[in-house]
Image 1 (cartoon, one colour):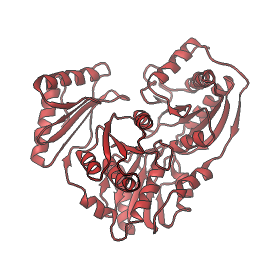
Image 2 (image 1 turned 90 degrees about the vertical axis):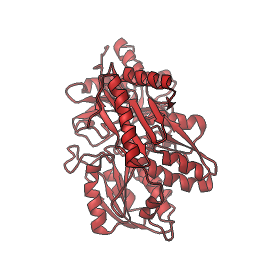
Image 3 (image 1 turned 180 degrees about the horizontal axis):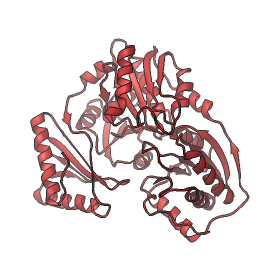
Image 4 (image 1 turned 45 degrees about the vertical axis):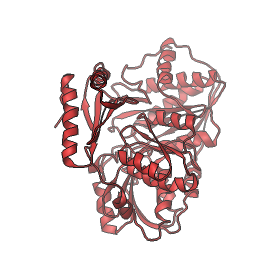
Length: 458
């Protein structure tokens, strides 16, 4: 039967909705049928399916699998776990496609789907095509089947395999009751050192704190534990384990671009001159440091699917986003895996004979910046505002990078304005060498927004 999705759920990088309002089991079944049709039309038949720890995920996964089976697909249900475990399963099993049921770091009553097809990210026009297939009801049909494929121990073993530290560390892991908890429990038993796991029980109510490591208030428990235990490092994950947060031994946060600098420094020792990608929100420090270390730094558009695609196109071995997505194609598979990034980071710190992570953070050039500023802007207006700002800047002769929104370089530093591809919001950030320069950058940003009838929140 034809099926129409709520117009808000088919997003740029994935499918997201609110259970009982914009997303239901019927939607999940139609997604299974539409995606299964794409798989079959592509000459494939095998699809791996995984799900996170949200209360609605088993229900959605069951309906999704029903839809896939109805198209003649052979489904391997890899079970509950983090999104990168699903990506790993699709690679390890040579599957033709993969779907993860996950709400990522969104509120507990949200859920959604992330997909891969033929080993590549499935996003943008492909996701819109699922809506077209469902609306037409033109599904493939056949005698499919589903089977369980518990890959958790294999995945944990693969993660641990690439630990190359010379000593174990005192590590605190904060799983935030998200989908990474069970794998972290298995992983820590395979790694040397002393490991303390916080909130490792998977619970879709997220009773301790919300699993989003980009928000400092979600890292308070981890900071306290690192201090109480005298730990070398703290690691945090988002709800589906594809984004990482890091705390040094002094309880200070290392942001995504700072983590990426440390990973890049190590990688460039074995791959001199390598190209490393960071998204448009990354600090100038990242680009300067990679150049100083002999690498080639490239600025990419924000979005995990876009970054993975760009990595594959240019053969970059490493990439990252300010949001904590870290992508390794060096000794790994090129997808965003926060658990794997953690293993590589622990290996690096475990090879430093006299230096701590806090010491390395102190060596990074110091900049002052705003946090990521996100403010509501209507879906039909957000891209128009960015376009208007871009036109005014071009007319003024400003130094502008337009790869993703507008990133403006001045003598003080830089500021960014872009439209979110997943929400009805505008995103802004400013960075300067000192507070006075930051104030001037923010004033420039505010003036441009006011000229388009938008007020920047205090």
